[in-house]
Length: 434
Ligand code: EPU
Image 1 (cartoon, rainbow, N blue to C red):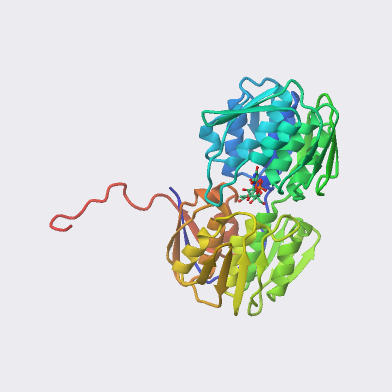
Image 2: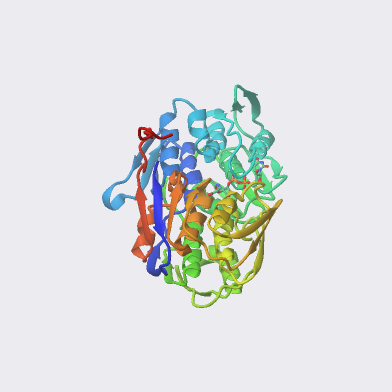
């Protein structure tokens, strides 16, 4: 298991480039199940979740080519023959987004078998809204042996109002509705840029979708979809993580290849904290040249402050001159990083969904454990400002969603390296001791 060794204290200086959005690439890859023709996706991030999805699609009979050399971030997916429309437990348990194949599979094959994902480090995360939506479109759902099976001769358009806003639930149903008979009206949809990006791809494939990126989406079903080429949007959470890293370390960093409009809630919050932010086309310059001011944060669905930036913001709050209250409204158990930050010297009190962070506290390097993707990112950020050396264990979490983060951070001045298993598996006790 790899670890990161980080020595804190360096401001981040220079330019850092953002990769394609993992959370847009995953549904776009699943969308290739809707057609027999090849779909070419560009700007695919090289992260572990993409490899998991490749394996998932390949296990069903899809041909998935990942590009090399100059075509490194391109993938060509061809789902001409689908042998088994099934997402097995082995893959779903490592990546919940595997459930995104449910809608497209039942729409294309008339049947889909998907393992139920079970619990998760950040919350219960059920998929009842995906299931309810598909039932509204006429699918019959049964559950047995930890799997759900969806069946439908052909899905039928319907009026679906989501009980609560769900990102992958909106995406799952959107894909299903493209091949349904008649019109589907979806309300209370997620407005995330990743949903809009998926709709852009689907429309290029011949779907007829209006309103994606707003709470109301209308889909006119078509009988078949074709192949196309599409460039995935930049990763707003990776971009946001670098923006916070620059602010925190008192750096002067250009975060390039991003869409600053997708970062509005975060950038506004950082301005409130006294950080100088200068968006310019597809980049943002961040100048962290003064003391950080505290500011409260409430996580919300897009365009609100993203839950996926909550942990990284918490690191920043530990370095602000005063108290900040961070309220997590999306997931019920997303403060695991706080306990690790406390071990590094932070003053954080958790009260239900609220974390009260009292700054500014010096952080000191320690051995810490990453519990999920964004928690790991927040610990890397904490390590960048900590005194001495921090060893972050279980960085496989960060590899799920950040492409070569240690190389990117090193290129702008951070002292961070990846190491393999540090200790021998069996610890031998010297004779005469123990
Ligand atoms: N929910 C239900 N029932 C459902 C679906 C969701 O109760 O059927 C609840 C969830 O338990 C949660 C809330 O609704 O409390 C929102 O969950 P949502 O479905 O929107 O989350 P998701 O689609 O599973 C995506 C991202 C997450 C991100 C959330 C929220 C992908 C692949 N994942 O998850 O990304 O945190 O939206 O923005 O798009 C990450 O990248 O680190 C990550 C966790």
